[in-house]
Length: 281
Image 1: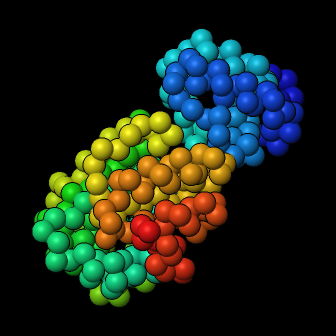
Image 2: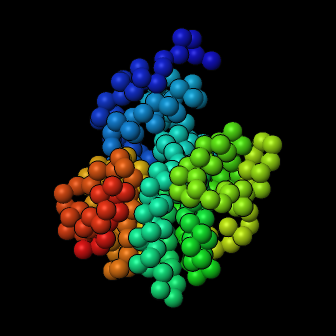
């Protein structure tokens, strides 16, 4: 163990932009995963978090570990990418989906929905519940993708701490003041687990937005609070991916903190400014 280890802030401030660029390029060359256009402040925080967690002392120590140990690198992706999500987060979005978006799509013979950067799955299960609530689940297929294998495993399991249950229930009640969230969960003493009938139309796949194509077309695409980690060049790259993957009558939903470059106006028009919902141009 290192004596007087530095904290995350100290380590982050020691990392120069040039060192970070070289580090990202080495990962791209070694593993084919591209962090070179990630927003530098966010990536530095993730790198500093890893260095501190594993007591590696500096970027040099982390660099050596990542290039030497493939399993270590893939196990630490979660620390480089902060996965923050919860059931019925921002209830107003789900109300807008219920009362507006799904009303416009409900007569289609099938519905296809993609949650890009699904993290541990709370958002896609929220969408499944909203579809159930509107009698649209049986004709819907949902795709949950993430770069992190660990996050995808948690999403597929659908198991969450019971300590969060009151918060989840409160958010659900803001979306729907009748009905019970436990209709969709097995509620235990320590954990709540999504019931199988909520999972059955969901497919989970590892996918890298930065470099993997998406051959399918979707009626709704979610990518919430993922692009905050991208610079404008990378944002436009993934926005073009989303545009090509979205049906012409579809909807694209981003996070409250995602800022789109001006060039995105060539691809999308704002449908609702409050909930950050867009349509393809």
